[in-house]
Image (cartoon, rainbow, N blue to C red; front, side):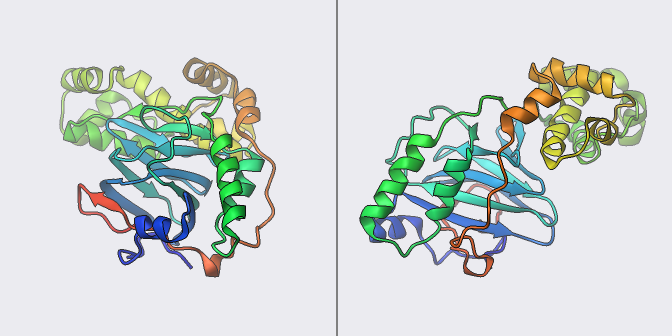
Length: 293
């Protein structure tokens, strides 16, 4: 089984691509305990998809939670941090750098349709004729497209005390302590912390908390929870207040969001055997002290 944090430094994506003429390599990752990786980048493009549990990615000052029914495209050379919750399971597909699937700019949400998901799972199998692999890769690259619903971005403050507050609210968005209570907790003044949030996130503390709650909701809605239950879990006392906040941040209702990102369940592929997971190539250029992923 390919395990999050497994040391696979002896596997080199560039050599695998050169040896098999493969342009896309897919790997499965799973772990029973929470894991995190410091800032690093890859020599190849990376698509994180098929998430079960919670997987968050930080690029620059933006945090993204990878939705279960979509994916996150991380271009080659873009530094990113990754964190996975206990029991999380996800797939990564690495795309050789010379390949340009039409996605430009920085990290962005990608629509993982049922067809794309099946093709990516099919490419998990290394034992196929080269002409068949090339056709499957061409189809997968043609299907890569930006998600219709943009991800909820959450700028993160650099100030150590503000960062403590931000991390606590990301971990528990239903925590309803006021800014004054948080400031007493971290040893700061309300005036100072208000300036910090405005300067470093571009939002007031209250607005930032709304974004944190809505971002958390985008990971809960695809799990099939009722809107009322999601509202309570992210800190809203009434579904109507939650729906209003969700619309302000995303521009759509929770129901519309769910319809845009939901795909049908996919049967386990014969190439998705947990015990035969293809280890991911470790072509990271480490910026911080990170484990292989």
